[in-house]
Image (tube, rainbow, N blue to C red; front, side):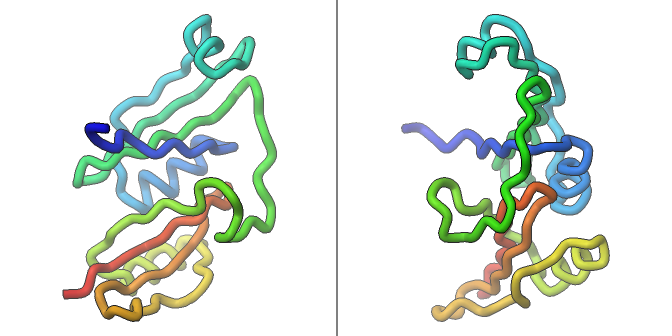
Length: 143
């Protein structure tokens, strides 16, 4: 393996998700397109697939790929927990976790708990959820 390429997150409403990932987290959109046809249908195993995809990049080059399955919509997960099988969360590093919590909370984002210092004292962390219930870890590295 050469490198981790991106994290793909399925969303129900691209505009709502962009408000979170672009406007709140500050990720920068690189690509925004709709894909359909033989290639994506074959790749996904979903006949007639129409996929709206937005690729966003963080300042460090990390990428998030938001995927809205336009032709095959699904409902949001309800009451999911961090201990669910499969991808549990996506983590982002910020300069100031307290400031981030304050800014996000003012825009309606709910945090599971206030920022906590890790037992080794190296990080201050908290969790919130994106508009579809995906857990997002917000981390401030302490020096």
